[in-house]
Image (cartoon, rainbow over all chains, first blue to last red; front, top):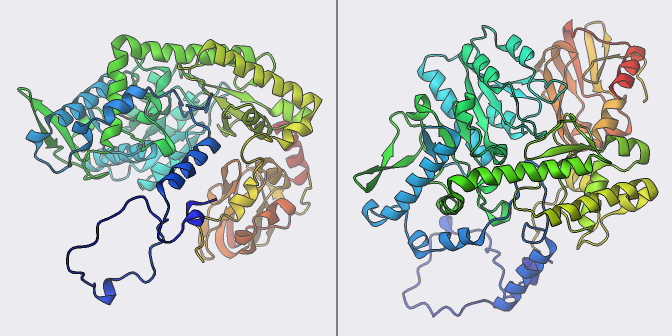
Amino acid sequence: MLIFEKSRPGRGCSAIPACDVEQYTLPDDDMRESDLHLPEMAEVDLSRHYTELAKKAHGVNDGFYPLGSCTMKYNPKVNEQMAALDGFTQIHPLQPVETVQGCLQILKETEDALSAITGMSNFTLQPAAGAHGEFTGLLLIKAYHLANGDTQRRKIIVPDSAHGTNPASAVMAGMEVINVDSDEKGLVDVEKLREVCAGNDEIAGLMLTNPNTAGLFDPNIKEITDIIHECGGQCYYDGANLNAVMGWARPGDMGFDCVHLNLHKTFSTPHGGGGPGSGPVGCKEHLAKFMPGVYAVEKDGVYDFAKAEASLGEMKNFYGNFLVAVKALTYIKMLGKEGIPEASKNAVLNANYMMKKLSAVYDIAFKPEVCMHEFVMDIGRQAKETGVTAMDIAKGLLDNGIHPPTMYFPLTVHEALMAEPCETESKETLDWAIGVFMELNEIAYSDPEKLHQAPVKTPVTRLDEVGAARHPVLKYEFE
Amino acid sequence: MELKNDALYMKSHEWVVIDGDTATVGISDYAQSELGDLVFVNLPEPGDEVTAGETFADVESVKAVSDIYSPVSGVIAEINEELLDAPELINENANDAWFIKVENVTEQAEELMSPEDYETFCAEEE
């Protein structure tokens, strides 16, 4: 039941004192045409409403959440404690900088830490999420080409294994997308890339995730970025999969010119409803003069704001989602120089442990010897032999209290389940989850109908996804 | 798979029926079954130009969004507006559910296949 349906006129959570100033009625032109529909509820009912909703959802605090390319790692509670401190919450973005020196220090230290981890020279914390970061990065590349008088450089190369947001961001930035197919190992086809780029002065750049969505680190990465630079393009690193390599390999050293990170993935801040997200963008020196917003600078222990000389303008108001940066910096400082690479190492170890065990009954796409932080199962064989699809296995997992892996992605694998266990899961959790996956494979062969019906134990059972997409109901209709 | 006998096929799974300098374009029965239940179709406008081998529309299923490529170059004379409200028509009968009619056809995409060759091609894709 929606909160609007539970609302009763006159109920509320607080007793507001009577108005003690003269009332003023706005001119008709400025008045709403209909009343605001604010739900009216007692605090106890409100509290129960949201507790009930929380019980119906599945988060990292409820159970295993191996959602590939989303890095659903556990978010340490200390992050929340830091972000809740009065010094960070009881402030205003326009207050004089001398009264918020600590906050500026947080911005500066976060920018510096992210630069050190990625091999960039500058960072902006303005972008609100990953795709917003992609858009920002592409605008930097565009500004760079325009400043060089290269108005014809409008084409962005995106491999077919890229995240769907990459081509979308490129189009948003006014660029044209060139798709380059992967080779049979799931990696960028270097020869095809060379063909597209050779002497091509219309190439604005390349967008790449490394490791890619199949969990594979591209060993030709330096060659790939060299090819782009040789034809005058810039290289954009999508940081979605940084969790596999932080502290081990830096996008800057791979030859990338700019990068976005997802603090809500790699740096343990909440996703989605627990967000907001944050998608900081880093760049090398030659792009720094175009950076958006303001950034913190320090001189003799005093912090101030500065603006880039040819700034793009504002990507978001003020300093981005500041409290998310507080949480991410807390995480970085808690782990430190030793902990950051260890987190990545364990993420890769956990993924390989799961992949090896599951490869006994599930086909692994692209058959890698070792994967990085994630791997892709191909349910095509089961689908052909039993009729049980990736969707059915995903629904079966729900009945066992496991959030399904990412489904039907990457697009190059038809019945894909992309699993990313993360470093924060114990061997016991992984062994239990592997057992569930094994059991679902057995059920696919012994009782496929059971999986077609799944889930049956969840608060809502199998949803009509086609009906929901064809006839979406997007808002509550008030009587 | 239901083949459309009077059509030619692209490797990217579009069919085209060419009649003089006009052409009708849709997607193959194989394509609709691989895509699964379609939930959204995005079509261009009559009067827009299409180029052989370049994308002119996209379809969305519960799994993914896919680009649709034009087998011919020309000018769009008509679009199948019915598909916009009822993308399921493509799943029901992909051979009848045409996307666009093109006039002033000047060019065909390279490597258009006969229905028989297309069937072999799809069997190899499996």
